[in-house]
Amino acid sequence: AGPGHGELRLLWPTLARLSQAAERIALIGPPLLPYPLAWQAAGVVLESLVVIRAQGVEVLWAAEQCLRSGCFGAVLCWPERADDRQLRRLQVAAESGRTLAFALRSAAALDNPSPAALRLELKAPLERVHIRKCRGGQPGSLSLAGGA
Image (cartoon, rainbow, N blue to C red):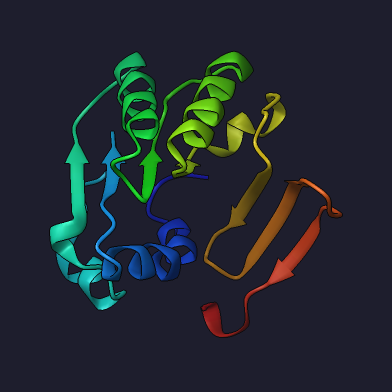
């Protein structure tokens, strides 16, 4: 529904492993200033984080450049609006740069088409994840025991 409802808690284990393996992580256009102590408590090496302040179409452009460069283990971006063509560009850039790409979008974007291999909807508070689309699998719901 909006930022700060636990969406990063789903990604932190993966981001922690990447950062501990000396991979850099780009945060592009985050809607809230990242809180270093929370990232550190999640096991993310703070020196691996690169925060890029961007707005509007700059978010998509910066994400594409970071993905295509191959210099990052993961790129997280918060596009305000993105059509399926723009998302496809990010997907191709991620594949060519061999980088994990995460586009964190509002629930309003669920009705828009996306080339993403996996689309999740988080129901706040972090207790239920709806799998809206998954390549090679069946969409459904997943309960998170204990909020983890």
